[in-house]
Amino acid sequence: MRFLYCFLLLSPLGLLAQTAIKADKIFTAAGPAIQSGIILIRDGKIEKIGTGFEIPVGYTLLEAKTVTPGLVDAHSLVGLSGALNIPTDQDQLEKSSPLQPDLRAIDAYNPEEKLVQYVRSWGVTTLHTGHGTGALISGQTFIAKTKPGTVESVTVKPLAMLAMTLGTSNYPSPGTRAKQMAMLRTELLKAQTYAKKMQDKDVTKRPAADLKMDMLVKLLSGEIKALITSNKANDIMNAIRLSKEFGLKLVLNGAAEAYLLIEEIKEAKAEVILHATMARNGGETLNMTRESAAILTAAGIPISIETGYEGYVPKTRVLIHEAAQAMVHGLDYEEAIKAVTINPAKLLGIEKRVGSIEVGKDADLVLYNGDPFEYLTKVCIVLIDGEIVNRGCE
Image 1 (cartoon, rainbow, N blue to C red):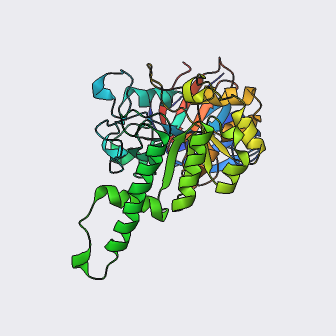
Image 2 (cartoon, helix red, strand yellow; image 1 turned 135 degrees about the vertical axis):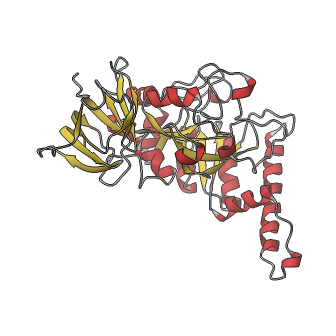
């Protein structure tokens, strides 16, 4: 595989105002793959894509075997969970209370965390990350680019969803599923009352501002989605029941037994972030199947694949490998690409910027020296906003 680096020899990583990429195959995630295609990038945006046109003078040329959009991790804890697995880099779960909707992911995210660099080297350019599973309401999530910088400079959405868990808990209370649902319903009913009082024309009768209630009101109003981790069928049904009662925009996370509830999920109009394909069967994921992505997609339920969270170092999975496993187990090739690009971008509401290779979108691209789903293929170059942020084939 040949790459032309005339400019890059002077600057290993950097912004190229005008860049051209030639590739044997370009998976756009917006239509059929383009054979022997060219992508033009200007000022961090995709300027042109297609075949049979001349590259303008002044463009730095890169060549690759294959190009995909920058990968979008639908849900992870990267940036709050760190690579060293020591107390100082594990900020993903606050254990002082099982109900903490006021916790902001943006306050805990570390853009310089080694784990962010690691996933970037595997082509992940956008992360949906935040507070972890195991708490009834663990906190807020947010969306960031994986490029270097301050939290403010990498943030795409400072508030995305509210992370919740039904099933296994890391707290003594609630200890049963009935108690979990009772506690959640109680808090949401309180939030409904709080919202009504905050609308009182007499400002003196309005309650004092409450960060927890304010966030639950955003959830009730549909301003943000409920990200509910639930793997067993009965927990998934509890999530659906809760969403119907309170009119929540529901995103099922994990959803190991979702294949048992196809019609119920469709009726609820729930979105699905599917567990990492190669997760281990055990506990609440005992009945998971690696065919879930194919089964749900065939049923007309768009799925996004997550890396989620791992208890062992390096605390995360390789997203492109998880998509490859879904493809091996029945998911159409290009649908597997979409499951880690445009599908999560749509789910997260950022599809106008990322998730596919289209004119006007952010130039977030991954260049490979072979088939992205081939285990021996390397990620050669990663670009975010037209800037080369990783090189790996030299």
